[in-house]
Length: 244
Image 1 (cartoon, rainbow, N blue to C red):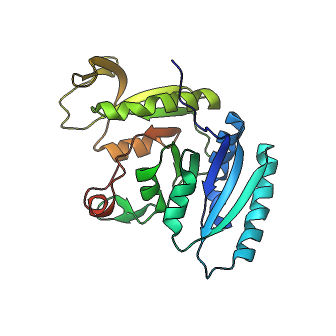
Image 2 (spheres, rainbow, N blue to C red):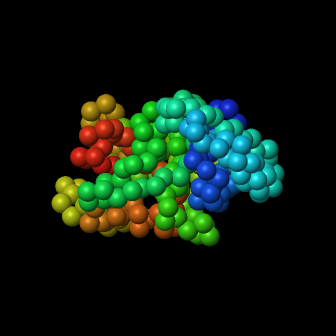
Image 3 (spheres, helix red, strand yellow):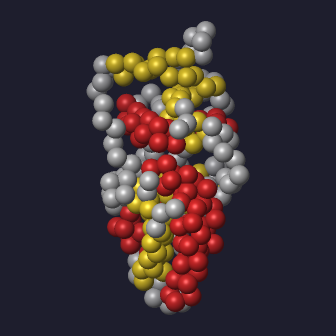
């Protein structure tokens, strides 16, 4: 099986609003860039009224630190645009992206207000999201591909496998079992998910018990890089339904 490329152009793109956000990404970005042999590009899209010169100077200082940590060149670009989000999405097309997310809480664990939500809806390549609560000193011990009972969720597995191989971490595939789940794990805490529609096959996965999927995955993320497909809803659907 030929695994998909994680970075077709050989770079890891870091879209940030300002240099201060890079600290949230540094450990994750450096680990991925070094393992994949990628160079890093810092991208900041600012409005016409912002101080572009001061903005660029701060990013250059951050880029020098990243170059030293990865032993790879780190490019810097500041783009001035009245349409910040649209520009970030256009620049991210077909590129591996690592970006911070504000994860602003809204209406019972729905997270809105971040460019990450819109980027996920449009992205044609994997996106690594680093939340504000991530401990930069905590080293991941595994890569976890989380799947549901829908066949679309398994699309994440090849990318998770490539990431685990390049980072030198073991790969686990899990399915969260809620209290009302119709399926139950066997004595070995594994189960087989059957996809009778588009794909007549079953998938062996580790069964993980949890009151809800988001909480169970957050608990696993304490020690793992979690890979999961997202429906990336937009607009009113995003606010009403949210996303894991």
